[in-house]
Image 1 (spheres, rainbow, N blue to C red):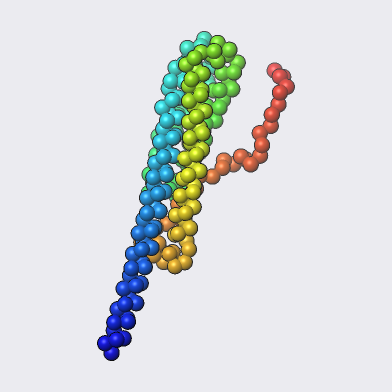
Image 2: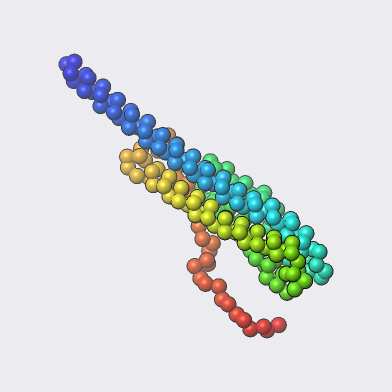
Length: 197
């Protein structure tokens, strides 16, 4: 009887140690996702911080389209107001955050297109430097989003695979949302060099 008791206690101890190991692994993956998310937010913040300097530089050029500047300023305000905590990275919240950031990216793109019509603006050293910094920042954002998606993929794999999913559901670990391509991003943009006005 004593031997059976020891075997039963040994099995129970092994299951407990296994469960603790799985839970700690999930917690570590969750922290990696949170760290990756913080890097994504930092990259977006860098872009938001550059925009006021860009707007001031562009405003210095006479007759510049005011509506384009207003769009950029409003999109920046909207994007910086949208805060998403690392605890709330559900697919729905990720879509809302991504929509706000996409709006800002679109406004910046329109600003750069309009700026092409102003040679005196393109010749300004400050504008050229800010444009280069924005391009670099967009590359950083893309890299951080890719890293974030990799950490979410790893985390979600741990959360949904058996038998880890038993510990995950018991411990409150749920799947997190990915950054996804914008609707229509799979279609290549049309390039037209005809100057019809």
